[in-house]
Image (tube, rainbow, N blue to C red; front, side):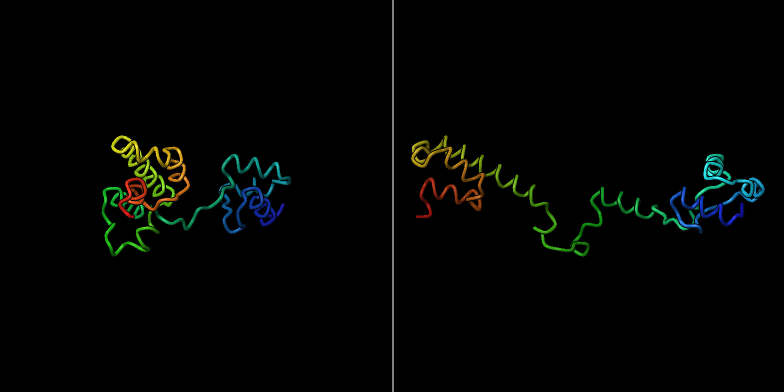
Length: 148
């Protein structure tokens, strides 16, 4: 078979372009003897035909940069894009906010049990889960009545 047809078959099998297929120059006669796809597969397995990786981009500089960032470098104001809210994960922010509010609710239940029982601990807890309060101060204002 002609070499260009073998190249086409090899490109199909290697799932790459024809320009990326490499032939071993010492075994051109074996390549020309290949007739079927199975013959080409065997040549690929033997290493006579291979996929060429010419212009791969080096990751060396990227690894160095990643190492510096792991140490805490390269994180100044000049490197930041977006606000603090945009740079932090929404869910993690929500979790920290909810945990703080729940902790505040348990503190209020210990310090002011009458005020909390008037509204209902479970009711307040569910309101926290539903995102009713902006922060800890709003819970305190509702329970103790500082905001009134």
